[in-house]
Image (cartoon, rainbow, N blue to C red; front, side):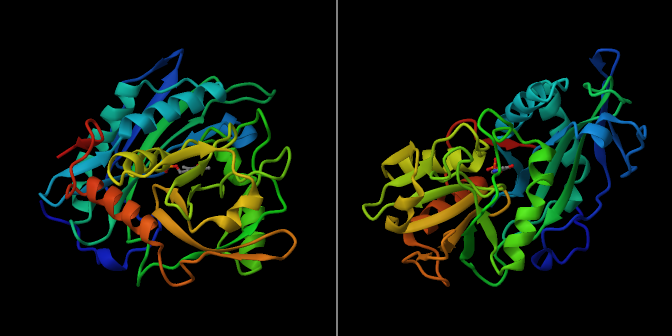
Length: 342
Ligand SMILES: *Cc1c(COP(=O)(O)O)cnc(C)c1O
């Protein structure tokens, strides 16, 4: 396979147009066959449901080159299922799991030249998305939909080493009780941009959102879930109906229990407990785990994690190494986690 002439190590997390993308249309109550196309633009009605009332959702996953030279994806069935659940909540026609997985295989195979080589630290980020393409003017679900999937090579997340993050507790809420916090809808991101801008402007990397109802329990950052390690080496992670069920987090919980033999607790975490933890991290597909250095509370007090502002905590590091080892094929994966494409 001739790879594209790309300096993999210097790639960032930015969109780079690749050769092919997958497109399928939902019309007259059914999905068409779907096909790979070269055109990277979308042409839809000015009155499309996505443009007027934000009827859209997405997924994010990666393709990797393993140590033995295969191209694989990691638990893509869970992305397919999550997008199915999200679509139902937004009254969009769900994409059947087989269709999602077939689109993924086709699209990655058509862009193999963009899959970064093993050891480069870079990966191929895959972006499936679904939106209302047909016209609406009264508030209603769109009559037609488009399901698309493209990919873009992305660089190593920690260029020049790990950098623990500086968080602040946000004064804004992310997700209402019984709202849409548990689904991967574009609207959750549109409304969080302002809070993110405000955090960056004040010198923070990310927001920690608390539960909107009581403002006492830890939720997530709005793009990644939290994991914490207690001083007696338990992995603790928030239980809430308003956070997005991260596949990375679910995988880390399994790895902690079955590979590192740690106790795992998924439960409500009062913010007041955070200062007692030994390590903390954000988890999601993009970075796998980013360690937390400090968290500034609403009253201005600062929680500093014992791992400091230059290091990743020892347990967090083991979790990171084990999960990335499983993804890259150097550590044996649990049954069904690795899907070989080529
Ligand atoms: C995508 C996402 C995550 C991370 O989920 P992964 O499946 O691990 O990538 C966490 N929180 C939110 C709000 C997300 O949209």
